[in-house]
Image (cartoon, rainbow, N blue to C red):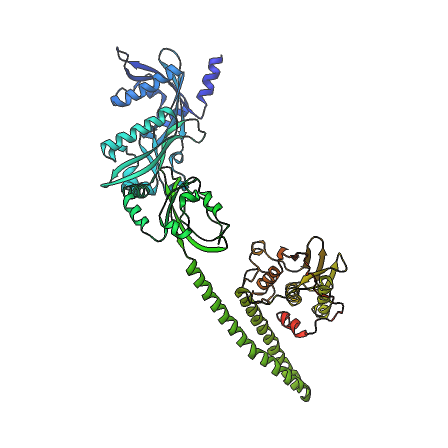
Length: 626
């Protein structure tokens, strides 16, 4: 009864089953097999009828080599109770996962599972990768290769697929590939090596990795898979350096620049010009024991940008300033990495040049350029001031006009005045930035009440803010705080930040100015306007940087203002940063050190209209007028 249940289950199974008995020669050699039973799925899958196959001798007419391989499969199943193999079956044009189960008297039960052809295809990543990639079945037949592999052996896809190595390569290469594949299958492990092959008449070097290729569930080995990358150029470079070391040393010993060869911990070679540049022998500096001794020798080492680490695999170029006993040198360095067979950096060859003279010449040239730019800006400011003065004179006689003419001329004179102020603001900013860059900017700190000073600025512009349908609020945690600061510069900073807060605020928006005096002096200018995108927060203080987003009003300045503000803050040894969120507003935070000039005069600004020169406010707010 139990056997009948099992028989019914197998008969109705969607998998193909087969019950066979081996047929052997008198010497025990495997001859073929007799089919004792099959199920319905087997009939459908292989398109045979049970009555035509039962008790028939199968495979007796196959080639001797094929019969030997099948005989080995059955022997393995007999010894281990089960054996799983993957075979390509021609008459169904499919790869099958074949599970062979041993019973008694040379009888076996066999189950067949279809394997998707996609299982034998390279992934899209490997197909377009810069590596050579391939898949072979258990017999060493190529199932798939990528474009790089086709380029390597100069054959088409159709000329490779379905072939074995001995059909594609010279005998000794094919035998080596077969040996490697058998090792992978036998040990079921990764195999790596560096191969040298003569392909298309050229000696070429490759790093190769091969491993077992399994089904999607990783239950069955389907064949082998491998990748290789050509390292011919690297090997040639390495061999060339070793071969020409004597010539290299002769050249290096006669160069004015310093040639350096280092590994991760120490210098291996330093050319004689080292002592001429640094004034000390490399052995005395200790670089042959520890490369860090080079850094410790100097009083100061400052890189123009953060240097790349030793393990960086790219060519690195750096410029740095070193100083010793008050004397400065500017150095230019270029290091080229040398790799081992695994692609790791083993050495670096570098050239170090003393560029102190050229750096000074470049600085002088930049100073001349800045002076020219400053003079040009001054020349621009003169006609702009004349235009604005002429407008004032014209305005005096405007009341002589009738109403229609008055309105007509007032409209266009106002446009001229407004844009004249905008040009003046731009020129002023350009002049000040050039002065800052050239080191000629005026900075005159005096002792004063910073709280009262900032509050008076807010009070002076309150009417203007209200006219723009906004409110300004001032708050502080102390009533008075005397510190040293430059009055004009602080005015410039505050007017610029407040003008931005007005420009990018919403109707009925609020501007908060807060002064907190604790260990440092903190000034906050906060609005509830359109905000700044996160990816722009680091760059808004750059010169000529403008932040644009879909919420922005059509009011944009030159992009110099915040750069100038940052420079003026740094003149006070302070820092500035910003917090912002789109649609919720921005918060500019300035921190100044609490400093005081001993024996300095104290100035307290208590009147609300301290901004005697209203023109300065008009210039700073010129971008806001409509």
